[in-house]
Image 1 (tube, rainbow, N blue to C red):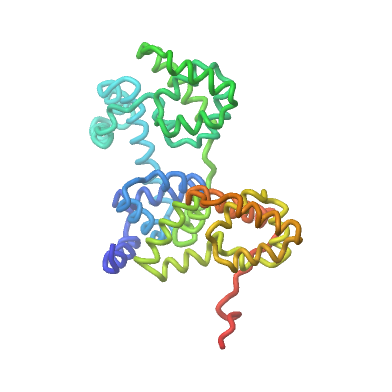
Image 2: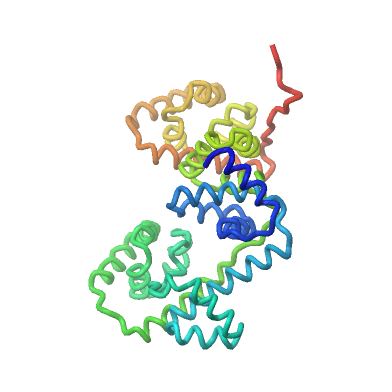
Length: 349
């Protein structure tokens, strides 16, 4: 996406929300940074991810009228999809027509036409794996095995990883031994599970868009997603990238923390995790950490870094994300303060 396209996106942001990517951006803003970041990192289409990112940054304040219209549209589509999955197209058409009229029902069904073959338990596919594990760990292992058999394999693997080892083994055996389930029974079980999971409600957040909203979302993203989007923004719009970066705290910003804040952080972070996070970082970041440690602690950290040897980039990113989250939590509780120098405070030689 070039400069002209960025300008066009900004101009369109002033108009009513009409494009699908704008509607998705408005929805993500309404859902809040935590949920929005989880959704963004699961968008595999890079062009779509770029467009939604731009729309979030350019939307500005979303009016209550526009937001309600977008939310109602998504609600209607999800409702139609649920009806189709529950009883088929004819059943969905009948219920939607009763609620919205024939014409609107036809529009909704057209939007969800590509979703007709939805798998059971589809509503769990974007859920947090640890949350799923905590919610269903005390349920009958047969039920958990049934759910894991239908959701995305990568998500099922993550859920298994969060379960106690004895439950992992039982559930895995039941998955392997499972036979086809009666469709009517499956639908009943799915309905019960959906009602149970719907109790985990999404919090309400501000409707304001713009670079602050994008920064809040990226602050909640994993290190890999954050890095990917920021590198893209640097190429496409350096000014916007800098605005976002100024509102974020990233791992490299450890160097702007005062010594007291670093010392408080070191009491919060595991040494081995910190050793992984520092792999491949700039010397100035390592020095910032080392200078706030005792000689013995510094030697232990250095030994851990050497002992680790080569580490996968993904592991380093995860460790850095954990450290940044610890910093943000300390700031949220008022235990440390993150201060960025303003332009007026900068020294010019």
